[in-house]
Amino acid sequence: MPLGLFALVAVGVHASADLVDDKVLSLVDALDAWADGVLAQWNSTAAWVDRIGPLQRTVIARLVALAWELAVDALVVLPQLGYGEADEHEAKFSFRKETWRTLFARVNRQPTPMRLVRPFVTAVFVGGGAYAVARLVESTLFVALQADVVTPSVAEGLARGLGVAAMLLVLASHGWRAVLRALEHADAACEARVKLAKSPWPVGLWGSVLSLPLAVALLLQAQNLLALVR
Amino acid sequence: MTDVFRANSRGLFDFLAAALCLWAAAWHTPVGALVRGGIAKVSGSKSEGRPLLAYFSGGVYDAREIEVPVTPVLPDTLPSEVLAIVPPGTALGRGAFAVLSRQPASVRASAEQLGQRYQLASLQTPDDVATLVSRAKVDFVTDEGAVLALFAGPELARYAVSRARAEGRAPTLEVLSTQLPPGSTTFFEATSQALMFGTAYGLSWPVAPSTRVTSPFGSRNHPTLGRQQLHTGVDLSVAEGTQVKVVADGIVKRASEDAVNGKVIIIDHGRGVTTAYCHNSRLLVTTGEAVTAGQVISESGNTGRSTGPHLHYQLELGRRPVDPFVFRGHKPVAELPTVPSPANPRPVVPLAPPPGPSKALKAAFDAVGAAPPEATEVPP
View 1 (cartoon, rainbow over the protein chains, first blue to last red):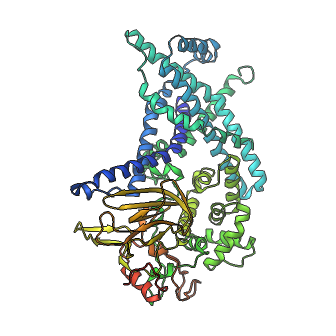
View 2 (cartoon, rainbow over the protein chains, first blue to last red):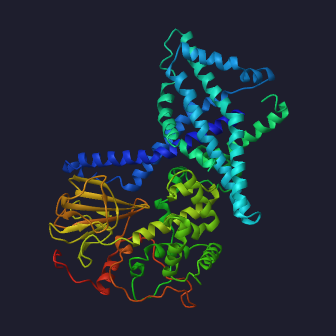
View 3 (tube, helix red, strand yellow):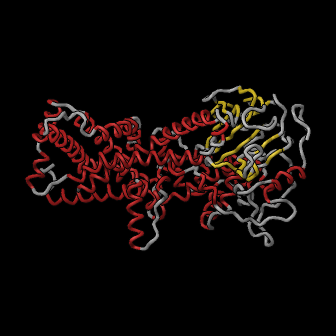
């Protein structure tokens, strides 16, 4: 289960990193143009102009996107591995409304960036991840079925149905658990800081700052979900 | 939920969901690629994972795709590069034909079947492929969809296009590549290469076609730096103030000035194709502006690191500089065989950009014939 949660959120993080890499490339292009302009002003540095070609700029931009994704994986997704349902009591505990109520009450009482951002970004990544799973199931089934088994239109209908079913299954089984774990982790990290008589505000700030733009980028593509019913 | 499913059923569903998530992560994320690569290394098997950076932007229009080695059988009479010239209008067909010729027999047979579906007896020439693409476009909406149908088959292409449209996104190749499972990568590589080549073959020339080339593409001793360096474009000898025309529709990515390139314009033509025009005396467009083929975008000059008035014209495919002469399509060429024969078992195909300098290419163009010089041109 913890591995499944990690995988689900990681897929969502990659879906959003894939959306922003073009923006990163534009930024790298603009930085390179600016640097070329500066370097070209002096004879001693003019030879450095155009040293970084378009191919290198693409590689740099993709490396930045990859590093961004891996950083979010490490800071935000990795704690999902801490999810545990060792016994039936714990399993029931996570189903209970009181668990959610208690955690949200703490968020209300002492809102910190981590308590506010982590559940939100995790929920968005879960949505993106579940959609990616649905699309993978749907396309793989379509390719497998349409070859010899059934007509393409039947294959498309079957694949679509099973894709939607896969998404619902993943959300029902893993979606809420991932959000709960994010809330729980944020709460535990903040509480540990409070016990040390320090402000919980800066806890997990890097993870929040890095993950929020990715989540927003993914949210802006939310209309893609409509494809499941079109 | 507890009322609907028994505990052990829930366990099965949870397991299934976890398995699906792990499967998706293994195929869809760089982390998954790292893990699969590690497993392959330990087990001594070959990893099927793409390079890590190819997990971004669908891996289409990448420079690595134009590095495919090509060894066509060519007549001895003309340099091979001359064969790359195509008349305007069949550019996409030429690009697709070039890539199709290098595909496995199964893909070529599937393309032939698609051709028959669109009343084409065979796909022996670039024109046949151009006709097929234009007919298929009616069903597959865009060039991207039609060319994908050529390599992946009509059903997969139709599916990818319909899913892209269902998402409300334009069916660009990047979007289409996200609609099919990971095993379809090779189809998208072929399609993106065909579209890149096709777009490049459709480019015109920024100044008069017969303009003298003072420095061709390739490695050279740099005139001002005095060391061996790759010349990433061609230097065209034009007088200061000569009108420079954009070679195809596109968007201005950069219109700026620096001490090396002088006043420079970079145009993005889409499908991984960009062109650059350096050392101008005056820029007539601004960054972000849309330009149409033949539009005057600047006046040539001698700005930046330049030893005399000229235009440095550069073509990039997949963000890698290539020799623009390879894709130049404005000079007349003799009729050349494109159909496979016993003596020439492989059809003559346009080349992937050659890695070295192209002085022979320039000489070949000059030998083939030039258009009458224009008023703005500097006599050789």
